[in-house]
Image 1 (tube, rainbow, N blue to C red):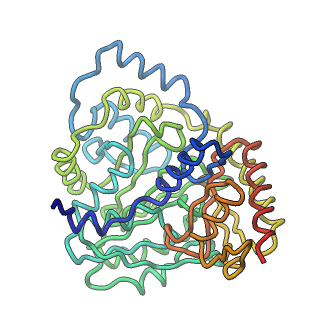
Image 2: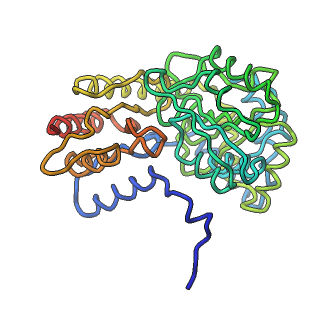
Image 3: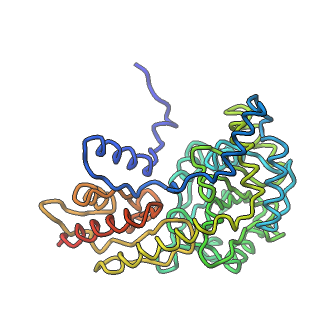
Amino acid sequence: MIELSDRLNAMEESATIAMSRKSRELKLQGKDIISLSLGEPDFFTPEFIKDAAIQAMKDNYTMYTPVPGYEDLREAISKKFKRDNNLDYKADQIVVSTGAKQSIANVVLSIVNAGDEVIIPAPYWVSYVEIVKVAEGESVIVNAGIESDFKITAAQLEAAITPKTKMMIFSTPCNPTGSVYSKEELKGLAEVLAKHPQIVVISDEIYEHINFGTKHESLAQFPEVYEQVVTINGVSKAWAMTGWRLGYIGASKKIADACNKVQGQFTSATCSITQKAAIAAMEADPIVLKDMIDAFANRRTLVLDALNTIQGVKTNMPGGAFYVFPDVSYFYGKSYNGTVIKNGSDLCLYLLDEALVALVTGEAFGDDNCIRISYAASEETLTEAMKRIKTALEKLA
């Protein structure tokens, strides 16, 4: 009898991917499902990026590439870091991977030993905890509720650090909450981390450009923690290139070399055509994203306005990304037609069945009081979805 590894058995399936799969299955059964479960822009990749990919194929960039990525791409990323974030990363401090998820996994596998503690502010992206499990580390969850805009304080971080702490992982703008850390808030975290130079921090900034009204700030800007911080980014979200699979890191040379070593044994480099297309994205002025960002801002308003008409739903004002993470604990203990809502998972299944809208439970992100709504969909779709959700929630008593 074949037995799967303990490592695999300890790992949870991605809740976002699981709900997306369930939505597709129901659609195949003929049900009119609206899926707001995946974090994927509903825009198409810009034409100038696709043109760069076509040209790369014509120029026969179809062979293996250096493991950390083409030199010209890493030079373009280096310039992007300086232009957009005022961060100095040379090309040899940058490793390009098959999506930001792999970038994060490379860093964790390079740093974390069995039993090492990794501080993860909650709510968190679903894969952080599972990647730490693969590395046999221990996740230390630091909770931040809706009252604090889902952001931890420097005091909370300090209290969570122990002699076993090896790493911290967080995102800004945050998936699932959309919360954005200010420069002052990041400075407070940096002051704590500087006292613990053994701690490596993964700063996941994949939603950097999807930011409403505030300037994106990077943790690595503070000189006292520059060597400790690994800045994660990629092309999936802002450039609508989810299927192209390209993420990257900026890090100290020591960590970049370690990630290069890990990647060389697991996947080698990402797609050569994707890399050449990504150069066009890196060199473009982010102002070209304005129409998309404006569309997301309008959708955020639409969803929040709708949620705020539903008794019992609590919301914050997400500053970035394309998610709303409302507190729906008011409905726990309520029921309809024999269905009792005990937690966020129950509520999401109820809304899938009753409203035909697919969402993701907050439990998967470390906060069971909430559910995640992705507004990466048209205003028409969102209007219909919110109408269905309101009708279904108002049936619960």
